[in-house]
Length: 422
Image (cartoon, rainbow, N blue to C red; front, side, top):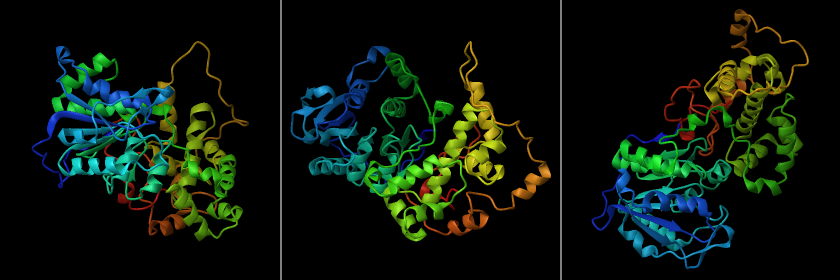
């Protein structure tokens, strides 16, 4: 579910006299993708008053010296420079060319000044990296393209990154996930400024849904399996690849540390520095991801899915699955199959090698809930021990704990957790 901040932050600033709410500045850089760049230009730059959409005044600003080259070798020439941002009540950064490069200092200064003077600052997709570099996301919730979320969390640990949101509205600073989610955020801005009727009218003209949330993506989305690009050249890459290939086996973080020829403490520190996530948290997420896929593509019982994903018991699977996806494995499978498009021929599915085992007796399940559960040698004792350890203020490794099919409350941010996932 997308985060719509109901309350403006206490430190909200009054808009400077020379700035106008109806003026939107779009900050373009060389190397930016043309699709993301075109989204705010289309939403805020075309007069659609005949359709009931209030008019904005658009200022397209070059964030650096021209020419601005974009997708396919096209060259753009922006009519304004950074000085025009001083008139805008909303400043949009639609994308940034490379998550490994630092944005121009002059552009960062212009964004900071605009924010200090009360302007609303918006980052679409990788534009969040520009906002983070300017320090505007410190201590705030934010999102970006799921593929780059771990890198954003690692590079800016004070940012509360949640890659499963379509967009995050934190009052005067807003961010969106990749590509089409930029349309969702721009529609949200129109809705905030002028109401639902105006946003719905604009959505009709753009031929897009008037209001999507992350839950509308349903079960077509997966938990993120990605890791930052930097890990590809790191010695830990081989250990990570081995873990992903052996999720069906019962092993723990100590096993991974041994394969990396490191102590557990060194391995934890190294893994966290590369990914922004604790290794135990990451490993549990990968096991839940594997379970999610098996529930969608096979007829294995929940007990069998647990065994094929490296969990010691179905109880451990159910607990971790519910914490990360907000539903039990059985409920998730039922909801997924109810939503799956029907076709003339049945969809092929993996078949169990043996007959499904019946679910455990209620009394046995109640007993198991108080027995060791988790990964390999990790059980409740390990969870209790990990509860006191500091957790990364970065990449969120779970979804809101909300039943499938219902609206979700605002997700718990990493900095607000009482204990780590797993």
